[in-house]
Image (cartoon, rainbow, N blue to C red; front, side, top):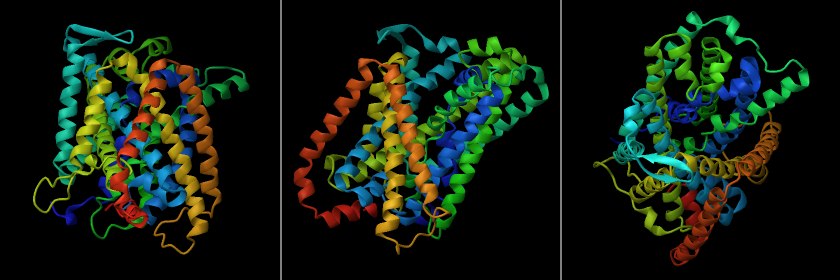
Length: 473
């Protein structure tokens, strides 16, 4: 595939939408409805979509300003300097690897909901949870498939992503359409979980705080924009962000209404996989329940694909700029004339995913929760960096500009800081030595790699390092 066959607007949409809509709509809908009620959950997700749309518009302007840059790390470099960019990039790699590790576990979880025998015998216990042979075999199989897809190049990766996202959308429309036709309106009651207004809004707020974690995915888009086809209109990035955010809200809203209208509330609250139980037990339509599992697995694969691609790009860019080990800069072209792929960085991210997956379900949740906090910090840095660069580089060409002057980026900064506070409180509430130890070890590893890469870094001038990050060279 030549550069002329790079990613177009639809492929960029599927990258972002496929990252946002993973598996949470199958496993977490019962929690959302329990906390806020169906209408309360819809309001919470509406608020979350609005917040993430504002943040996404800031990303769109930065992407249009630096379309070949190495994502958020590059934006932070331009606004706040090299060390801040290196720190942001290193913790973004952790976030991507932890997310891939989560998919390692959840692909077995969903598969075993349909075929329990896939679990197999328990081979060891880790952090209070059992790890079965089937968990490892399914997870490793997923790692191999996604890694090979990424190493095959942009064309294979885009085709894989497009097909799965389209399938997921079609299945979603089918599921939610049947739920609307077969569900019972009275099961939606109560629309909120409390009668007093103050308690109602507390419930809505408790879900609203969660929603940004289910909408986050904007940092994968800058990596994909680097593989855009010639002639792509950067002005369309704001539209792509808006469509993906709106589409995600509609999809999540459909899942909430489908679950609430199909299954009695006590059964919904007790279900391990609420959407699966809603169609299988509530509507008595097992084929729809199994179809939901297919959509969930496709969501895992699209999210896994996007996160592996983005994590490898960030790590490779860091190595090329001399802020981590040059070992990770190695790339290869799958076929003559194709865009090269980050070989060693891809394999490293996949190896980390396997290592986290081997810890089992009991350990991975806290790791993912803790890894999400740095992403929120990056959101703040990107939005604040946009404001700073508007002042420092007022005449720089901006094919896309966030509308309304600076008040929208400033609002995005304020809301992002609020999300950080909520994320830290959530992480602390989760407790556990594992996640805090892992964060410390990861930070120490990043500092060590920074020092070990000093000799390579000194062979490059600051201007050369900046060029490599901002131009993806």
